[in-house]
Length: 172
Ligand SMILES: CC(C)(COP(=O)(O)OP(=O)(O)OC[C@H]1O[C@@H](n2cnc3c(N)ncnc32)[C@H](O)[C@@H]1OP(=O)(O)O)[C@@H](O)C(=O)NCCC(=O)NCCS
Image (tube, rainbow, N blue to C red; front, side, top):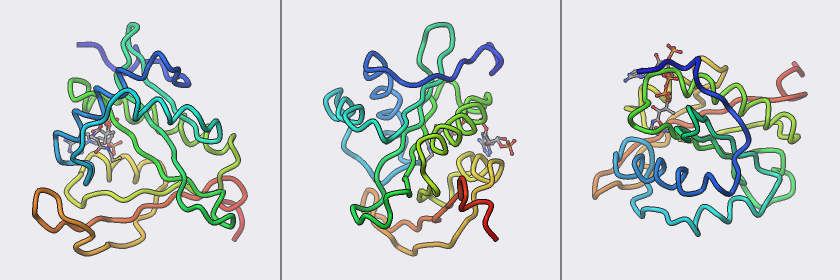
């Protein structure tokens, strides 16, 4: 087993789509990360690349894509244009080896470079690794949406997390 020092973070390319899909679908099947239950196709993910405003990064180890982080729109209203939602998924085989710890700071840099002032997401309270990753990189747990939706017929809470970027992070 290698450790995270062998891992390179870079912008995703369209050639990464099958790996991104594979890793995402592992996460969907795992039921620990998202309310999504519909597994994604290559076509679903290919459209992410159509809007260059939103960074997509991958972690690569020995030529294999082993994780990704991607931003998407928070809301359509113009006043929220500087807010991004994020997703981050690491291949199950690579969990707990520091891939997320490498991806996240590079992703935050990419978001700042793209002009976003805030990034946010919603996490299941039980998602310890994801909450730890957020804590490490300066996210704030804003609060809990109770019974936000059902997953497999069971109500689930979610914790809202946010991280300020650029000027928003510096202004008192
Ligand atoms: C969340 C996820 C991206 C973290 O990536 P990772 O490469 O596995 O995590 P890392 O090894 O970089 O560790 C990140 C932090 O989680 C902690 N962690 C890792 N595995 C853990 C576990 N099983 N239980 C509790 N904490 C854990 C690490 O100790 C580290 O915290 P620290 O910096 O305070 O020590 C990854 O586990 C994943 O893909 N999970 C499924 C998808 C998901 O939940 N995505 C988030 C919602 S979009």
